[in-house]
Length: 430
Ligand SMILES: *Cc1c(COP(=O)(O)O)cnc(C)c1O
Image (cartoon, rainbow, N blue to C red; front, side):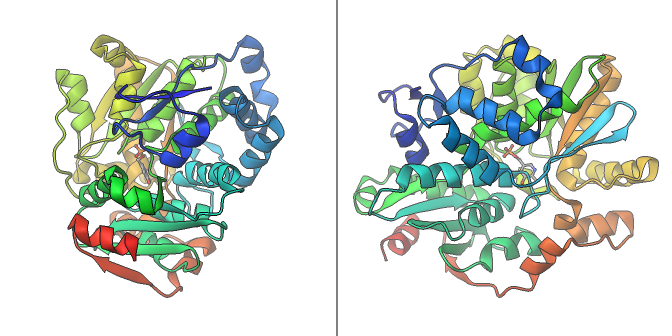
């Protein structure tokens, strides 16, 4: 299978090149040339299979021409060494708990898969690969932990100083080994810009082997398609199903749309946003107007220029009517997110994190107005990752899982960084 850039200014790429490059030379995002179709037999047999079995079959359909099936199964089993339970929250709403991995957020899935696929492609090379990742919180921890200890690959994490939670920060600043954390004097958008600029810097790339692990890397977003099949397989089969996705850079939603294109019978997708409602505005006006991000309590979704928008446009041939037929949008203020967390806990006993809360509420609103029977939402982080916020809302002291406590007791090791590209470049060349 070959991969093209959404900007269509460069030749087709192999899977290996697309994965190691991350971003195409024309600044576009890679997309598979063909989208494999999974037939009725596949879906009929799905409910009896494990997450890992389903993921392996989908992985072989997508990557089987380029990586042997047995290797793909190893990559899947290595990456998905945790459960993704589907939990009933209310009569018609289910939570897909994506937070049972090592850093307790859904990004573990894509990051762990990507790390193993990169390792597969670089195992015979002598030059060290440097993975650059900008993070608004959860990418950093997932990428750092996904790559921790992988030989031949170093990881540089850029994060906005003071804008990520203590627990998130501890997950990528205390690791050491092949992981370095840069504390940037700016916003997430600044971090993302620095990384993008480094990839476009020809001189730098002649001297260093750089690659990306952000959700722009196709090997990060594509494996996220696996759990949509798994979730659908666990849902009651007597009715139509919709899926609600808390969105920032839209990699997660894009993976769901890919699954739908492969044949997954999810009827409709819901893009749930915090106050950064650029995508909702697009759905309402047909105009995409990126703007600086606003800080919210669902900070992993504080994105002003969602990078995967280009992929969604590509998938739909920029046809606005088709996009709005498949996707609805909702946006919630911090005050609304707080109210949802409180109400959901009171009514159902379920503790949401601020990101999942957006998706849970968007699903509730959608089901109510569209008389659609059932749906699942993606619960993308464990509530204890946002303990201060959730404790304050619920007037409680929620338990911190041992996995998170272990990070908190580590020693912080970071390097300070300005938002000037020259400084970042110097650091990379050091
Ligand atoms: C990254 C993240 C999101 C947003 O996912 P995208 O793929 O960027 O849209 C939502 N929730 C949590 C907890 C995240 O870490």
